[in-house]
Length: 410
Image 1 (cartoon, rainbow, N blue to C red):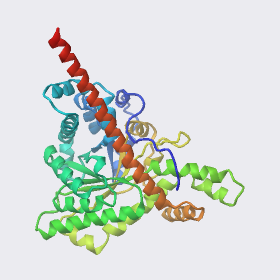
Image 2 (spheres, one colour; image 1 turned 135 degrees about the vertical axis):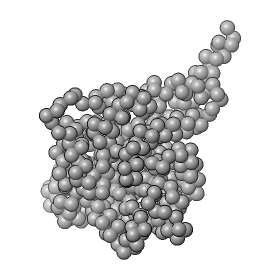
Image 3 (cartoon, rainbow, N blue to C red; image 1 turned 45 degrees about the vertical axis):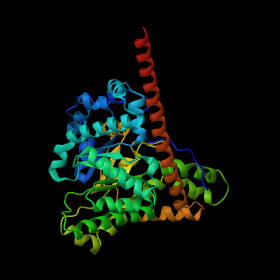
């Protein structure tokens, strides 16, 4: 088993005030590469959410100036937003005074943020129902509980009550029937924690099966949407150290390992895109498309570069292509605005991508084993983030109650 250290994908820089650097200085002479990406059929979403950026108008500016057409969130992002900023202090205090428990506070805060972002993105959504979405994740503790995932997804969908919301469901084995059932009920789904190519094919087929359920009921297919969030940088984070060990040997594998270093995530994405064309070019899907079904677009997630030796736009430049989405954390969005060079790249050297994955296997690294480990670790990471947030909320509750007791005793 390959063992590696996995950084949480928070979408935040270490600077709590990262958003203060988001708004660019006016420069009428330079084109915005983020806007140019649209010409290649790719949408830019943002992997970041915090109440202060909504209230200040910064998110609205990103939508208008940078073409941000969607927003994604996860438990790590909300843990950073709520526990490590003061944006929510007044709301948390008010909810504590109303007697709300920590899990209720979390739900109320996140649902309100998702609703606010959905409303900001509604004009984008109204254009063609393909963009303008904001995602909210089911509890990561339900990742291996199909019935629990379905129940919570239904509840969150009802609470948010916005047509341009997406409920995030993990791409675990237990998540697959949940995806099928939720799509079959007309609930928009963002499939998260997706790493492996065989699992991606299963996710796409679960989406199609859900559409078939809707169609069999005579319900319209045009309003239901889904994206498959393929996580990238974490693949290289786990595989690169193993390759580095091989690179230091005198074996014939050393040179091959060097060529594969930092390339496996991108190779996986390019192969996933070929699977996308195969699945959604099938006769099975074409029948659904003829009555209004949309494809389930691939969304590139975990796109911040973890290795400082790599370009900070590595997971953007190499993966630009039609009918895809790239969801960027703030630092990557800012970097690409500054020095991105958009061109269609996702379908370049596809044969080389397949060869890279074959070469990886030939030097003894099992990609399926790696991606399963990443899935397991990803679930654990999100559970840990949510647990930390619950601890923080309970500490705030205790502080408010202690203050009230002191006031009443004085």
